[in-house]
Amino acid sequence: MGIFRTTVGVESVAHRGVVQYMADTLVDTGSELTWIPRDILQSIGVALERRRAFIVADGRRVERDIGYAIIHAGESTTVDEVVFAKESDFALLGVRSLEGLNLRVDVVTKQLVDAGPVLAAALPHPLLMDSLSAAAATASLSAGAGARSHDWIPQRRSSNDARSSRFMLFRRYIHRSERE
Image (cartoon, rainbow, N blue to C red; front, side):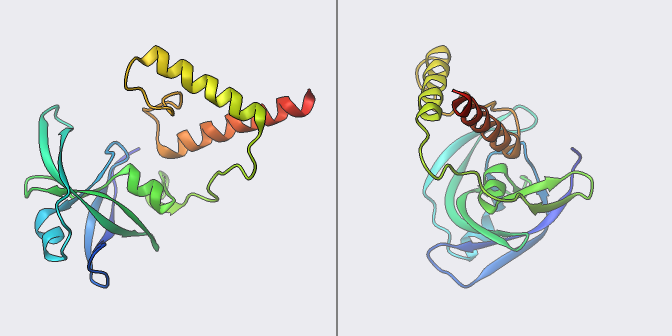
C-alpha cells in the first residue's frame, strides 16, 4: 500500500473542547489501535484505563497504557481506545479508528476518503441469520476456545475488505433465498 501521513486530532472524552492536532501522523492499517504521544494525551486529560501488550513491527513485545479519546481525521470524529505512546514510538492512526471514522485509504492519492454507507441489515433475514450463526459456530469450533463470533471474516484484511466480505455474504444469502 505504501506509507503516507495525515493530520490527526485527539480530544479528551472527559474534557471536551480542546483538540490537539498532530501533523504527519502515520496511517497504519496494520495497527489495530491508534498511538498518540503520552505527553499529548496527558496534557488534554485523557485518563489511563489499563495496560496492554503489543507485538511491534520489529517483533518485540511491549506493554503500553491505554485510554479512551475522541479521534478527529478527514472531517470525521470517533471515540476509540488509544495507546499512550512513548517518545520512541511512532504516532499513528490505526485501523479501528479508521473504521470508526468511516474512512478508507485511497492508495492512489494517498489520502483518507469517505468509506461510503455503513452496511446494516434493516430487518433480520432468517436464512442469513441461520447461515451466519452456522459459519460463526464452525469458525469457533475450528479455532478452539476463545474464538470470537466474527472469526469467519478474514482477519488479515483491511476493515474495508472485511466489510466487503460481509456485504458479499449477505447478498449471496439474500439472492439464494429469493430463488427458493
